[in-house]
Each structure stands twice: as C-alpha cells, then as structure tokens.
Picture 1: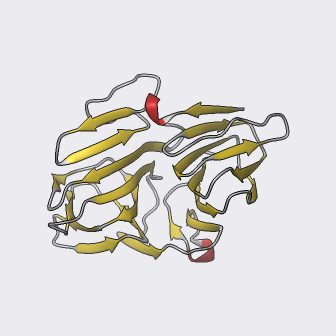
Picture 2: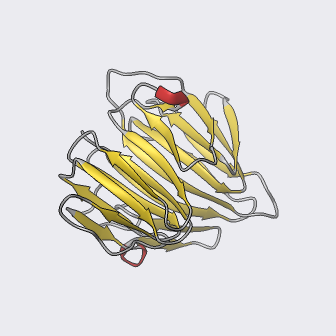
Length: 233
C-alpha cells in the first residue's frame, strides 16, 4: 500500500532566517497522527538564510543525517568538535546525551538548503560521532545502513537509506527489508509500481508511506532526485 504525503500537506515555517517544510510533527507544527514513521522521527527540508545559525541544543539519542543540497554548513558540539559539509555531501551525527549541537550557514551571501532526517538510535550501539560521505552521480547510492556496507554511513538502527537519481523514463527496483518504507522526492516526479498497484506521480517535495510491500519499482516521469528510506523496524 502506498499513501502519498504531498508537500502541501506538510507543516511549514517561515521565520525570515529559516524556511522549513516538516513531514512529521516538529517545532510549532504538531499533528498527533504524525509523530514519525517507524524509527524515522524527523524528515525536514530547511533553508537557512546567509549567515544564519541554529543555536546549541541537545537531542534525544538519534542519528541525524544532513543531506546538503546547496551551500556549506558547519556543525559544532559542546566539546569543541566541529565539521563542515557542502553541497554534494551527506553528514551523519551520532548524537550523545549531555552534548549540545549547533549548525551554521558559513556563507554570508548564499542560503543553505538541506534535508535532515532523525532516526531513533539503538541504546546499546555506539558509532563514530561524525561520519561524512560524498554523494555519487549514479542512479542509486546507498547513503546509510546498519553495517556501513558499500562505503555507506553507519547507522545505530536497522535502516537503509538510498539516494536515487534517474533520467526521465529510467526505473529502479528495490527489494525492501520489511513492511515499511518512505519515499521522498527532492526534485522531479516519480511514480511507484508494486505487485498490486501503480500510484500517480509524486512531484517535487512530495513523499509517500509504503506499507506491506516486499518489492517496489520507481519510475522517473521527469529527471528525478529522491530518497528511499527502508524502515523494517
């Protein structure tokens, strides 16, 4: 079963220094029916104005994946560690209890645009505090996984995150690990085909809940960039 979650249905914020779209409850946006999906707690697309910053804050034990679409960011923690990531890179923060983290747009002229995901972390697992990955140009790249296979970022959870880049008319098939997944269009239009249905296309910013499908085929109706988040747990 595939259930769309269009960009128009998502929560939104415009603070001047920050423009955001929230798939799930976040900040001022609250929907008791949308507190996350399986271990996916947050899926935001946010634009920080030139020179803008998120001030230090603490987090629950989550893995935070930042996919930088435009600009360059610096992430700092309260122990003095800092790391930078720019467009074409993904950065994974394994948050720790008692530490605070901040985010800064390094440019005074250019906005910073990124996708951010929070994933619940298994309490008994510890990974490197920071991991970084260069995004490839291929049709499919495994961005993150539980075991770091194929040079992916290593998560503290049973989740597989794929970046998909297809030309119009191209398609990709996936065998999912379990009963749940989430599809997010970053730009372009895509439709999904399963053994039982074919859904109309999702366009830029739209997402879809995928339930109880062992296999799914994604067909690009236009040039496409998207995320497929495989969430068996």
